Image (cartoon, rainbow, N blue to C red; front, side):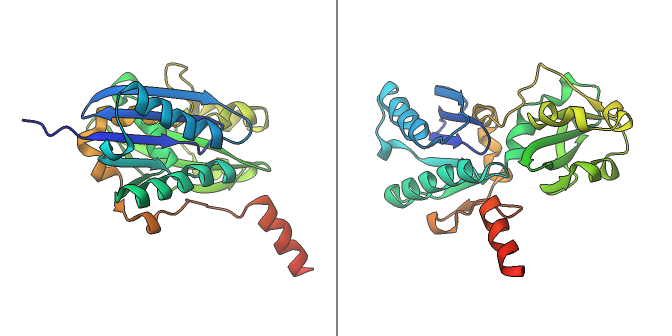
Length: 238
């Protein structure tokens, strides 16, 4: 018999936040929202409402998953802090997921003819976080780590046609060169944000996507310094 494993997963790494509670492959509760400012009150409230709606207590959670970025500094910090607190309180390890793995999970490889996938997340100040994947045996395999690129350097990395997902495309499309834009295929059938509900169908393979970590090892995936840190560095180097 299958052991029932209640999993709580959440992500607030972009302007989109999502929380899901699932048992094996069955989603028991799911909530998502779009927010320009802090996710903090939305996240803790959604977890609370979710547990109550399933008649579960925090102690019933057997597995924790959290999106750690890249994305917005404040958004990632909210998720990471909540994950660390819950893991510490419940004595659980945490599966830490990259935003681009969450994005790619929302794209069924058999529903696109494209061989390559490009994820784009806004890194602000005319920069993008990107990661590339290749379709191998009807699954997306990573070609690159998550990294940042300035708008002017994007074309150096993408040389062939890619299915392009991520909300940053809409922010920056007007700045892309016509040649670069021709290589990007958009499909509105796929979510443009990392969404943790996609983890439910991959729940058997979750450990292959992420390493379980102790609460004090859970770290945000910050690829570049925050605006505040950059300002501080500028002052220091003057």
